[in-house]
Image (cartoon, rainbow, N blue to C red; front, side, top):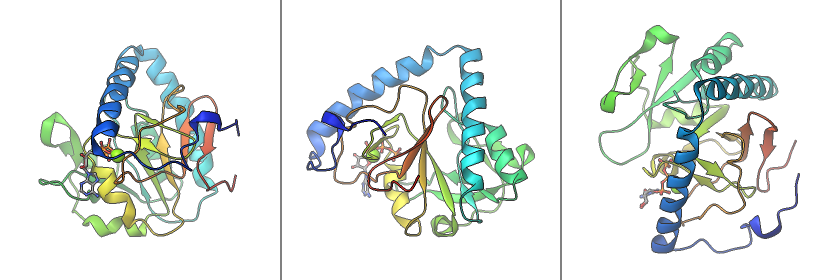
Length: 216
Ligand SMILES: Nc1ncnc2c1ncn2[C@@H]1O[C@H](COP(=O)(O)OP(=O)(O)OP(=O)(O)O)[C@@H](O)[C@H]1O
Ligand SMILES: [Mg+2]
């Protein structure tokens, strides 16, 4: 693993709301611009490489459901990854955004035919909702992110949904943020409510364990 250098926030106090929020907003804008600039072939190639890394990594994790997500736009991940997890014998659960701010609900993914239109023009599972506690059954969790750092601090899209959700995972459950190359950065601004991830997956280096979770 590379030197942490100035990027290691593990010994630093989280920022309080104001400064962290402003720093996050600026970082999100820059990262979303970079994602928008990715061409369709670049996105497809990144998704294919990421899928290979994550499926190989998942083979070494304990059996049980994967909580994952359906990527939108240039978000890392793919339906092929969801299908690959299922083909490997793992049930896949997808998040359903609650009507009011709170933890994510979960519903089984049973292939592309189990998806239907959701709010904001997004697709979501049409299967029965299992409730937020379904996360406790997960053997691994794939988390969307715009960036993360080597301490495991994660930048999401700003809804706070995963910060309200990840605490319900069973202790020791791997929480893997899916990133594009270049999105593992030195310093993710961190707030007191932010939940860290235990690793990241990127197309080129593959899996990188973050924070104090280094078990290879
Ligand atoms: N556990 C929590 N309880 C109450 N509010 C929270 C909690 N976690 C996050 N929030 C609120 O959510 C807002 C967005 O948080 P943040 O900017 O960290 O989102 P994010 O991590 O980018 O989003 P997401 O988790 O959806 O990917 C914050 O203003 C914060 O007040
Ligand atoms: Mg957060």
